[in-house]
Every structure is written in structure tokens, then in C-alpha cells.
Image (cartoon, rainbow, N blue to C red; front, side, top):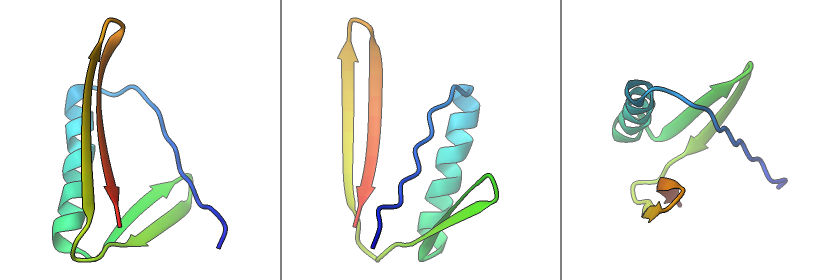
Length: 72
């Protein structure tokens, strides 16, 4: 299978980011799939009952980074 990758980097308000994270969390809590749509393309990933969660938090002189990664 070929690698399918979607990367997006944008600047949003704190409230907009929270809304996106809530939408992802709601999908994880209620469905077996996560759906992402970008420019008329749909990505659907089946999510098993157990996933690996990695959270990284870094504070540096030039900024702060919070990275959340789910794998299965």
C-alpha cells in the first residue's frame, strides 16, 4: 500500500483549535472511524478499541510546542 499522508499547518484562534480537537475527540468517542475532508478529498481511518497516545510538551526560547499523536 502506498503512503497516504495529509499535513496541514495553519494559524487559528485558540477557540477554533479547541473546536477542531473537540470534533476529533467526539468522533473517537462515538465512531469506529475518523473522517477528515480537505478540498473534496475524504480520508477515512478505522480506529480500533485501543490506541497508543503520545503527548509531548516542549518549552524553548523561541516558542512552546504541544504535540499529540495517536497511533494504532
